[in-house]
Length: 273
Image (tube, rainbow, N blue to C red; front, side):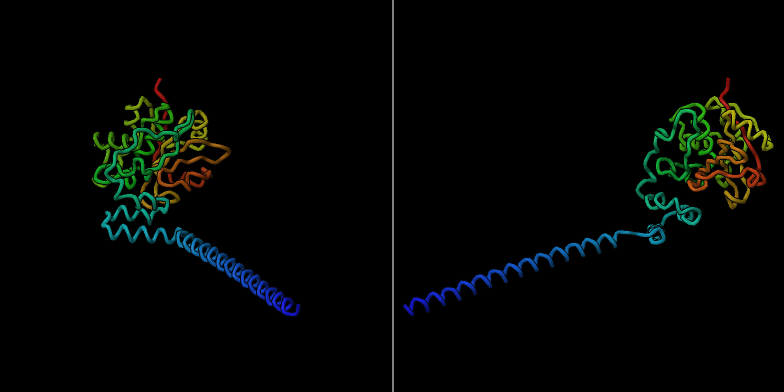
């Protein structure tokens, strides 16, 4: 009887030890699993953090890469003029020889002058004189905005307008657009135009009648050298500006009195009857 009790006692101890070992192993496996999950999460977090690039870092990377690949100096200089051009410069090698878009697509809305940008990758690589639209094509881009908006024709792109300007000798040796392009080229798209130095009241009246105004700008808020912009609307002393080289400047209203002194010339457009 005592022997049986002794054997049962040892059996009980054995079972307790086995259960304890199983429990310990399970705990160890759970701990190991948690460590694996934690390590994987940490790895993913580190990878995600590494993939997050600040604008400053991106600008530096794109500039260094552009220099290394031997991009033209005036293409690289776009980064100094406007950081909105970063993607354009980054993709220069891959897209510079691709054909331009045939239309401005959804940028055209009925009854509105579209906001188009000369560094848009759909047409910014297109030639203009000995340069490209992104660098020197503010004039053709402004004309494309006006012509497409007034006619409702989405096929009038900055690249096509730039080609028309170059073919008809409206580009000088510095790849600047002659002023007579603004007066004469609109006829190609059935636009009438007159040029005058308008008062604010006249600007208001023309814009409220739906007649956009292209302006040649002297150094100031919009340029350091020379530039073309489009006035598209007027409201209580402020004007809406479509600047072909800046989304930021195009997104705000401008007090007309603040920019009037920077306007060197003006051209008012409408559809020919």
